Image (cartoon, rainbow, N blue to C red; front, side, top):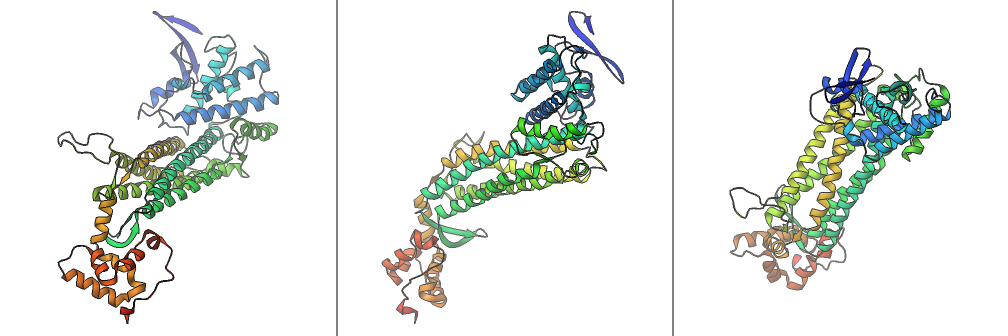
Length: 478
């Protein structure tokens, strides 16, 4: 019903608690309006990827209900109604109407408020498409038709999985770009010899290329794990309605709706063998979150390593912005610091996901809105930071002279000569160098062992080959 209030046109809607006045231009209805008042908490909005995934689920449900003849045709034909609902879903999937989802991400009710929100937006947009007035639910009803044969408890967790799979695919592609950036530097720095370090002390000689190859390998594992773990989210409980028994949903719909969802999403989705179990337990999200946490840990570790190499002067990070409001000329490794913060947040989000999953009770998990928020947030942050890091890594420049300086002055490079001269002889040379006034270990070894032998032994190839072979023993060893 429409009602004039002053200069504004409002409409009156009702629910089991009474009536409310809503601005006529809003696509949401009374259930959303109450929720937006009730949960004025964090200011975080529901992740757009979840809203789009919910629209995909609603589209699949509508198609199944239409094909099986379950949509009513009181005011318009079933075909017209189905087409309008599908078109409204498509608009949301394409990114339209996202401003019509005002409910706080942290909401009670296991996601009911968000489910009600999308039901109302789809219904009112479909009504509009059919030439009606928003709020005239005799044309398209948000619960009796958009939500037909559904429950929040099967729609909402299914949508989280759909959004999660798309997120994982985006993340895998972003990680691939970061892996490629490290592999590019691996080749570029392949002939730069330098000193390795363990426990923040000088260790055996390596190459800068090998150091970046180790970074690339860790990120490669992250890419593969992220790519593979989407299969953990493919099993859904759609059709199970409130607790997984399918109560109030016809059997033919329960089987067909999964096929429709596969068509709509293009994903290899299947219904769980024990739908009650899928409804009650959310443990697959813990497993996938663990993969995200592993990647986050790698980002923090590698970022810290790059900051140390930059501090030592062996590499130079791209300059992004002025680093201090008081110290002129200071430039900080801000991108790596940002990546570390993303990593810490993702690891914290993993803890929240574990808590949410462990605190579900009996037939459902009532805390899924928090899980959805942090789960999708983690993927969004990781996608963004991987793309930024990939470009940042491409701009890294090596200081070969500084690498050589540390290398030549390090007594530990004597380790590379152990197969030639043995431990005792190497120890004697190390002590002799330490007791001398010399500063350049390489020149010292050239004096003692000969330049040709030294050059061959600490060549980039020898330092990074797996093991050694064909060494000519030093006669002085005896």
